[in-house]
Length: 440
Ligand code: URA
Image 1 (tube, helix red, strand yellow):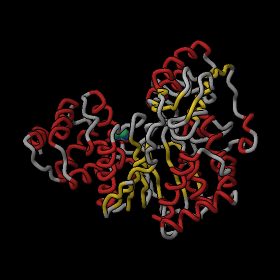
Image 2 (cartoon, protein in one colour):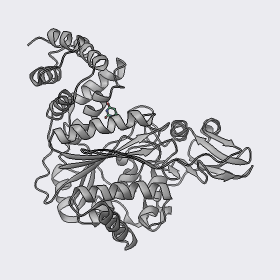
Image 3 (cartoon, rainbow, N blue to C red):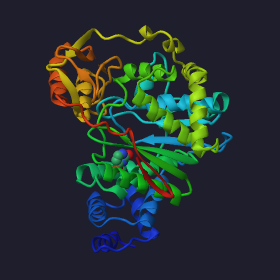
Image 4 (cartoon, rainbow, N blue to C red):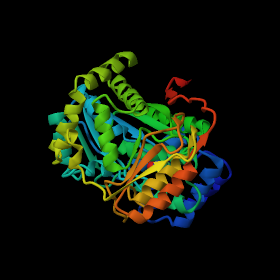
């Protein structure tokens, strides 16, 4: 088989066989295909597309390029959740303990963040003492003992995706639905879950900026899941506004704890509880409505909060943080960002808000940057809220005093105040499963 022929075939719009897809993945991982040929094929795929079968086979080949995590030692159905990411997205910290408190094992491998705030792993590391680098054996043992473990990705998970993603990043071939869907799902398949719930974010703070593309991405990922034997459903959720009020690592942990105490912001609670209920439904705990009830009971009884405290303690963290937020490291500087006019908040450019929190120290600019866990932004007001001139819209937290004016400048660009109140958009915009799409 020759790479030249595979490139030519896709360039001319033909379907690739599974042998050709596997040849590309295997040989590229062994460095026997040069980057220029791999880039040419990726561009051909970008321009000519891949059908459902090709996309599933590309996903499967990338998943099998490294370790396939075996969770079979853990009894029961293992359901994973994946979010395509957004500003203030801390749902894993809420739904993980809820699902575990309902008796479904949560064996969650999460990533670090590059950008506005950390990923789930960075957020957990904001808890004093919390260890996210536990061994594979401890990870499995913890899930067996307390029903939940959340750890950083270890070992060699989907190395083909890592190599191909780096190449796509520099050859303008990231933004293709088949390539994005196979990239995300290859890591999910390698992580060992039996069933998958996807949260595809849409809007200015998301990877996918419009609803149509977000639904297409969700459909492509659901199809891959079903074609590779992992029952998968997706919801598409709003990311034209930060999720919750807190952006920044320890601020987000506190907000997650508040949500587990049933006094979190409405939008964050709703998205987290919907995702948790979908996970329970996929695990066979009942109908969606029955699972919503189980979620409510787990939160209202305090069992979900206790499960979070148990998780923290098991992974070496100070579980006292659930009752005493002063145990988190504190910032040296806070600043109140005030409304410049009276009216209603009409838009919040969420990606710009992400950049403001990054400037304050909450995120990573490069892989090597260190995160300031205490830095971030807490919003008192969000899109749709009425504000008076001079009212505090947000509090900025930082150890870098010199960054405050820059962050305020970004907030000025991001938050628009208008005379009329904006039309309220639904939070959950679509539900997608193997049977089809339900739009809100
Ligand atoms: N996230 C991924 O993991 N892969 C993509 O291609 C895009 C976003």
